[in-house]
Length: 211
Image (cartoon, rainbow, N blue to C red):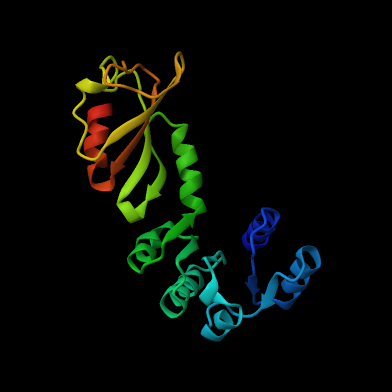
């Protein structure tokens, strides 16, 4: 289902897409609705990926319901066909670190995304991960300042932000979206959008939240 809807969206935007699907019945449904954008086969097999032209793909995306299959598809695409970028769906969030260590460029975990949305509504979880730039070792995170946060009442220049950490945006209930300067005063309920390294995330949290 993920592959079908993803293909439909990409085709609508004018991209060249080819779906590899094992099930003949599903192939027939896709072909009937979207045209000749589907090939029956096993994306884990080198011969199948060679047949569908993985060597010239800009991006190989594996979104089956099986993490092991998604890992194999992406690894074969990168190691055998030198695919520039790969994206893998992860059903078990515990597998994310394994995928990263084995060279998969991007991973998408629906469980993790849903949890982050839930946490964004909980005052006990003031930090939300928005985006990772793994190639550069950077991440974009969001902090919501509670009334007792350490940064409330301080100007941005008064905070000792960790190296390689910047605050490009502050979203305030009273002032709207602000591109902050050193003189920007931080208030309760402000949402702080920050860019930082994973290893300095806790230090940044301590400066903003005090915990």
